[in-house]
Amino acid sequence: MQFLLPFQIPPCPFNITYHDKILLIGSCFSEEIGNEMKELKLDVLQNPNGILYDPISIAESLISYVENKPFSVENIFEMNGLWHSWKHHSAFSGISKEEVSKKINKSQSYAHAFLKKAHFLIITPGTAFSYQLKDNHEKVANCHKAPSGYFVKTLLTAEEIQSGLLSAISNIELMNPELKIIFTISPVRHVRDGVVENNRSKARLIEAVHSVCAQKQNTFYFPSYELVTDVLRDYRFYKNDLVHPNSTAVSFVFEKFIECFLDLPSKEILAEMRKLTSSVKHKPFFEKSLSHQKFVLAQREYISGLEKKYPFIDLSVEKEYF
Image (cartoon, rainbow, N blue to C red):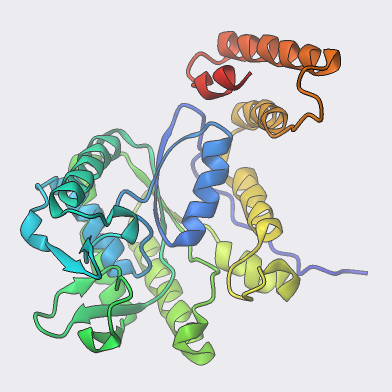
């Protein structure tokens, strides 16, 4: 008896290794996958602007990393006692505009340097709905819970999405022509827009991304969206809000990602990192017991061996923990 739809992911023409730098940008699902990578000691940078949902905001942010122009305090606004940027997630908000500006510029400068040396860029848009301010038509990446009357909401066309992404890629190619780009669509369901509207939005993202991949070399589509909605396709694999994939679904997609992209030596390293991560998560009942002290000593020796075997992986956090 068959319980899952057979789904063959096309072989990828390139591999990710533990020597590669990986920049992830996009929706909260990209954070889930990025956290899995980071935990297993891959060299990643996640969302330098914070979580971004629509492809135009993602494209504009990527261009800003290439240009690395200082972000002016004039672009920061005050609302409800905090200062914000329309181009950044609320993780960058703060109690003074100077503080916010400093945090933004620091992140952007780091993203510029990282992107210049990056080997992979993973782009994960979540919705084709875009917002702009009514008064000046400025595109907004995050609404910061401002009243809906501040904005005009539009459903981007596939052509608009494609144009924005191609523009970002063209800018990146000037700085890092060898960069490989992996597109994936977030399986998070934006049901606040409406069920029908969410499906229209996802369809436009998929069409636009496939068009970009058909036109650009060094691009690849990874089917995160399809793995959740067409293979798992059950609310058991969502959190209680029935919108966000749960940890089981994220792990399923991540395993498929590893199968698709990591080369064999990196898969072997990942297995060892997974063993170490499991040890870090171990919570002893009696920290001063002889058995736990032996466990700690064994982990120190294990980390020492890993450092000699893989000197390019930073294990300082794990080393300090034990």
